[in-house]
Length: 341
Image (cartoon, rainbow, N blue to C red; front, side):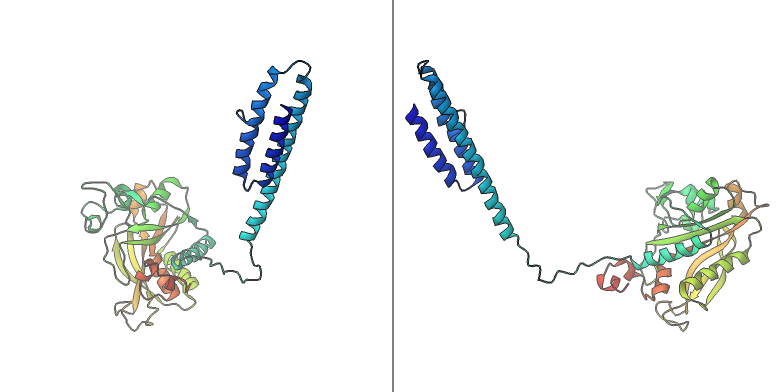
């Protein structure tokens, strides 16, 4: 048995020293020290020894086991160090090589225009509201005085979810005005930006999906003069002093009187071009004094309070702000276009 233990020790130490990988070393450990290993097999023969031989052989066997375990630990450390050294060589970096420039993104021109609008209105004391894009016809039409039969409620203009549905993709962010009137304390000064949907044909100034910023003020003694003064101030802050606007009479079911505001075409300076369809002006927003019926439906006394509202197309605002000739460029996601901003 003494000769067997000496042989196992000699062979195992040599094998551990020559192991080329952690997997090979673990296989050798099992071969010599496992439950069915060579050293274990010898230890199972201890019972056949005499009482006088057993203590000496037991001590020798423990010494062999300790030697093998120490050798395994040393070999594992050596292999780990070699693996780390090889990894450092494989993943070496030449710090003298110029690095790759990281391209940072930036805001879309439309959202740059939105941020400017928010800053202007917040500076005037307005609160920014957000609301659902999937809306009820009750809020999109009924409570805005657009009764059944109004052209805007037709299937040719509006995206309904199914026939006879009262659920739709909102065609304006005006429903947020009604929700504000029903939930907020007077006086109210709010803007409501967001995506809206209409069945418009795509051209240089129209899209079936676009963005609006609705605004509303309700207080005592509010007049049309307040509306025009506010909108002219906003336009001059956006586009610079002396920006030309014009107000035209119009009709909206939720305002009375109503108007549309145009801004002189940035492309042709009022001469006429494809961007403004030869008119020299680009329609920017619709506005007016809130209809007394709309106030009553929201529980506000029109004899005490009055207000005005407007809805501005955000894409057209960006077009005028950054002198973009075609609205379709805003949605095409052409990096060559977007990188200009």
